[in-house]
Image (cartoon, rainbow, N blue to C red; front, side, top):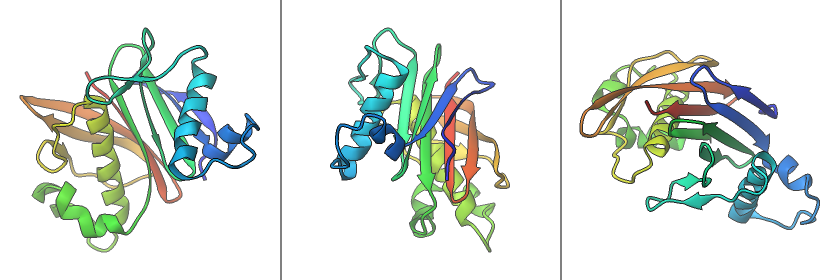
Length: 196
């Protein structure tokens, strides 16, 4: 289970993780009646109010969230937690994911041949979770819909750990080297990427 916390990163990003239950309980207005996707959306709205009072999230033409005259922001949620990321100067993408066996079945849809070649054949799920989440963070930092996870993003070989950095390349018009940072908690992972 994620501890509720905020931390500053060497990249200049500020990250906050909160449980959805604690965000909704802190307002004590819904009496536990908010369910499903509405519960997750309401937790984002309320977390925005906590972190940036008098601000409202808007979406650009690509659907990327922003706060007018505020820092670059991004957020993600799992069934139990919200991850919020912000950076004063650069686009940021964040993702929080829980392990799920479907990643093994879908690996050829989001992993390149090179990525598949370095997977641990006995226990690939933790690496697949990191690859998927890292690519989600890159996709969200880039902010435009024209990225293919398999073709446009490459994660260099790595061994999964509890926290660290994955080296990646975003290849759209030119190759852009990126670092995707991560923290694992039990069977979940949080990743974040700041564009140069």
